[in-house]
Length: 318
Ligand code: PMV
Image (tube, rainbow, N blue to C red):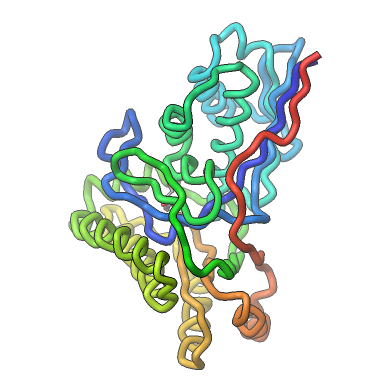
């Protein structure tokens, strides 16, 4: 029985990617930079099947579009006949499709599991090229720590002098998002009059964040993070029709963060294609941040630290 198990982490972008210059190859308009989390991840098993291809996600057999997407992705590694002889079983240890980047960990895990199972032996560069076809941001989950996905396609770890960051993911709505990031970003690129500023500003912020990480300039790291997410949601709102992922609870969390900063605590917000808010804070300040969240009724959250990239955790071939 042949079986491969992969584990891939969630990553949260501090400098956001939103929009493809090349839809087919998934080349972004601007470079992005993320933080890999240690305790939110996807586990994906690929194993031999005698009953044809199937895809199970969180203990539920998936059919239709989602299963087809997995099947299509596997074609980068195997022939249709080979795909018909496997089952893919995935478990997201993170709320699925709620702006917590479960598709990044999912495609990153599927990618490395497939590369090993089908003996494709892709180089890291080729693996990145394929992984980002599942979900653009998934290529950043291949590595740990701070990770850059350069506009040129290169994915690499970025040195950070300071490592005791904490990322708190505040779940204000665990439901699936109503509009996929792929569709939403294509609409933004096409219709948002702010798009070119988003690309220009984030390209500058990407370079600035690398410098700030290198020198350990915490204030600058936080401000660049906050600015990038505000630009993301601004450019989304200016899309026609508007793309609105924020809700009143997201705004409430952002206001709490603002108050914490006024009290000299380190806390900066970021959000992706969903209503949940992530807070970048530090080991020394995070308990105060949590106290304040709980005092305001936000009891559903995850506390993460910097984590490792995707890896194969089990392999059997007999
Ligand atoms: O990975 P995708 O194609 O689903 O896009 C995700 C984009 C954001 O999460 C909103 C930003 C990012 O850079 O991760």
